[in-house]
Amino acid sequence: MDTEISASRLEEARQEFARHGVSIRQWAHIHGFPAQLVYQVLAGRKRCLRGKSHAIAVRLGLKPGVIGSVADIDAVNRQASQRIETAEDAMR
Image 1 (cartoon, rainbow, N blue to C red):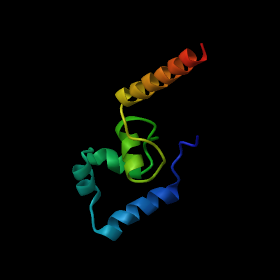
Image 2 (cartoon, helix red, strand yellow):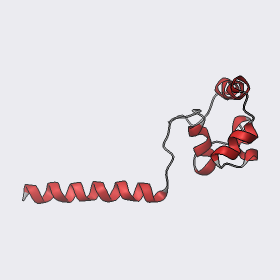
Image 3 (cartoon, one colour):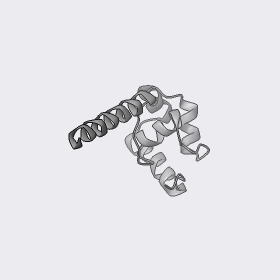
């Protein structure tokens, strides 16, 4: 998976703020992110692989992805394990 966000996509995102008349700081505050981190993401200084920078990039539409937690991943793994056990029981 390509983790690089293109400079043109970052510029488009910055232009969307201007088009909507919303400051980056205001958007960050509304969504509960540190404004400085949002500025760093939009400047291309963060790789946005995990944590808040990942969530910012996904929320801004800069990259595909899911915003979740480790608990969400654990729940998916538990469900998959249960499905496997059920299938194995049915085969016996």
